[in-house]
Image (cartoon, rainbow over all chains, first blue to last red; front, side):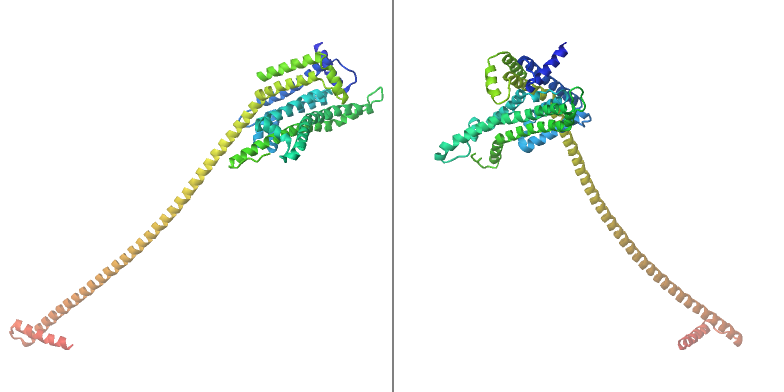
Length: 263
Length: 196
């Protein structure tokens, strides 16, 4: 009975965004929580299996090798984009990657996923952008971080008019990063699911299901799973590099006995 | 633990917001206007879930992975270091061996040269000694030959003298002073030798 109720929650969460028939807000909430729990469970099972194969010699277990490959990939991404100090962001990037990828895989199997819910994606985006702002303030100081939003130093007559405008645009730009991160993921996963449903109707003559046309999109959707996880992590790394590279440059200049230039 | 607690609190707040009607007007008004329905409760709960999830994943799974990879890297570095050290040691040993080999070859060459020189000196010495001894033997032989020749001549002279005396004695059949006759004959023979 509980199992049936749980799946009703899942359907409620999935259908809530589709808008076919409105479930109660609480059912949608629990549906999302169950989906997140499924994603967390799959992630933990994978990570737990990988953890069993950890040693200091040679990783022979398949899941451990896969996790190592993911680590190497994310490490390359973090160090390549952010710089040598990007290593400390690897845990967060890996968690983002795993959660988004597993969520997208869940969407392939049960046609309902946390990443097809805009609230979930916006929540992740808020965490990502909030963390970027926190790191920016930690690296450059609160004043230093927000002074970046004011643009270059201008003569006083121009600064009076242009600097507030640039500041406003930068604030909007920073806010839009949330929208960019969340809507892209939501659009791809939810849109992909809807496209499958819509195309499947082409092979349905009203009584019998002739050909699941939409399910032929599976390879593309599988690619989308990887690409969307990659894009989220890539953008997160780019945002981090934008707010932390000044700090690192400053360190470099200081280490060479030069004063860091004003930004 | 603090992160997990914060996450749980945020999930509870999210559930409370979903259940309450206070934000419904904001959600319906703002989000529906742009065609998106964003549930603030789910949003807060998601942030809460992630806050906890990040720490759980990092603490229980990623940190052991990083430790294992770091450990493996250190072990590899250690192994490579040992291999490098062994290689350096082997190179050093090879250099020493080659040096010793060169020295040994030089020593052997030097000893061979010395032995050859010694042998040549010995040969020269032996040759000289042999020549000297041969010369000595030759001189000795010449001396002995000379001595034997003189002895033979003397014996011959005595014998001839005796024969002459015996012949003369028989011929003259008279008592002649034997010593005086011998001296006369010797003088005669000496004269004959000088003439010859």
